Image (cartoon, rainbow, N blue to C red; front, top):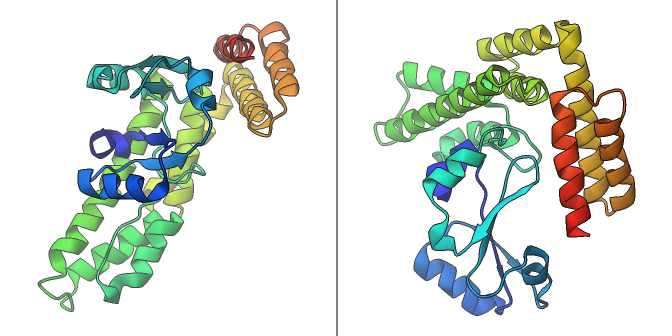
Length: 261
């Protein structure tokens, strides 16, 4: 799943109460590509309502628990249904890539890791167009360039899908991520124009305002300020922004928050 959907923003985290040594051995033997969290208590089991091992839960890009059950029952169809709007890239929302490149191209690898994909793409294209590339390095550089282009295409598709579905806050956010990653690139200029176009429509401005307020509320929740977060979400669904589509999301998040206690 990580290999198939990671480029679309899918993340997997395994939670275990086992010690680190046998867990590391298991990860090595199985080739599992998920992150691992160690927990000595059963708080996660209780929080998700799991009744046995192994159990899995799927959280959508809005932070809502949308599925739980035995891992073998988490199908491609379920993931594809809920992955829309996921952020591709690093944990802080940037588009970034961790790729191994030949030592000679270490600076390009750093650009990719930092999220300077536009500059990295130009550097890769220039290197491949020149005569100084070792034949052994060429396939690696070509694969890296293709990876950057695939990441760009996926991010652009996310933005376009969000716009088609009139999820304007998600669409603008997706275009801004493209703009930041490709700021010295034609793709970045096009993304800037697309993000600005969304903000021109007065009706969409309310959606953008509500979306930002939801983001701020989720930050409060992540900081342990559940009451303030719940109040902020309720103010969106009951206040002047109640007629926006984002208000429905705020209401769903508030209901989930109350359910989770």
